[in-house]
Length: 138
Image (cartoon, rainbow, N blue to C red):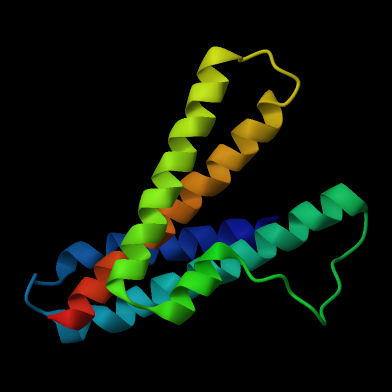
């Protein structure tokens, strides 16, 4: 958990440096954006391992990592695919928010909250990828 917190702080620190670049300095900002994406991917991997350990009491097997939505989106790389994924994610976020609003005492409320947190984190990641794709296009 400490490792995840450290990676989160590093990514946040890098994100806070984005404002120092001029809007037209695409070449200069791209390495920083790539570092942020890498830190977030590392953070996500550590968090997934921690959640697996918490849930099953053992570390996940290393030989067959399960691809996540963001990994499949990253490989496609097109701006349109990223925007479609973001739209679908926004729909799911809306659905889960509505479920929690209507039934806050439901037995699955904790699960819905956890899923909503994951989707919001993925949404931020997709938004960063969209920004990076737009900078790469111009």
